[in-house]
Amino acid sequence: MSDIDNLAGDTRPIGVFDSGLGGLTVARAIATALPHESVYYFGDTKRCPYGTRTEDEVRSFALQAGRWLSRHDVKIMVIACNTATAAALRLAQQVLDVPVIGVIAPGARAAINSEPGGPGGLVTVSRKGSGHMFLKVQGKASHAGRCYADGASAILEIAHKTLAIDTFLDLERGLTVNTGLISGGTSANSVAPWAESRIHLTYRTLEDGQKVVAGIRDAVSRTVIPGTSASISGGLRLYPFERCEAGDKLFGLVKDAGELLGMSIKGQHYDSASEAGFSSSLGVPTICNMGPEGEHIHSLNEYLVPSSIVKRCKLIALTALQASRVFQPGK
View (spheres, rainbow, N blue to C red):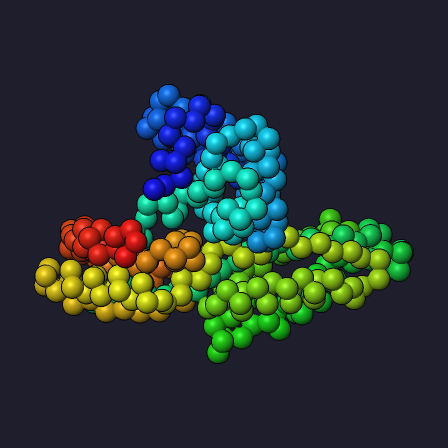
């Protein structure tokens, strides 16, 4: 019996929590499906987006929202945010005094991600996780010619930190750390009073991702140029899609469906992240890159094979039908 079933006849409102306004679609769906219910909506627009926040921050925000909704006597809390669901659902269910459900797992027997598949029948059985971090350095402005020593260059400081952050790159381990954007300063003849950078990272296991984020935070805490200060925000965003027994079972259904359709399906690991990590991290059997075949994403050579569109749609439909039978609740 579900949390919703257990609350039948309870006239208290349903609480919906999201990092911003996107969860209004969930609130609307609840209002449409349950027109006699009242809905309280908590949208954390001040601190969105959550995708750039650390896990600890997201968990803290989710618990704050849950306690606020609990004080308003809701009978159940729906976390309408993917990031908050992945990071905080289990904790919220243990800590809060109201039932809590998320938007990923409830009722989901399996998850099929329809990002473009690879040529020759490739689908994805595991992917990396990813994260984004934002580094800000504050310096002190001065004239670069007349009184250079009075200033403190934020650009020099961020250069030292960027080199320190780059030491976490480990291609053999599948760890990438890339400072892709840097800006700062006010003019060529001024010691830079500010600098900012954006860092992207990928990792194969959640443990590796957490270690890299902790290491980057430690590196940023160390000052090289006197008179500067730094802060860093963000952290893990998309969890890794790691292989598991239930996921391999779903992949077997994909291969069976492909055989019935005259398609040879092969599994691959994909060295980038996707939303498949959300569902798989919650224990939902997941398969990725089930969409039309193509290659070279995010490049000038990117392409999609039109003749694969209908075939892949059939593959998705047949896999979903089989999964609904195989992954029954309680099995």
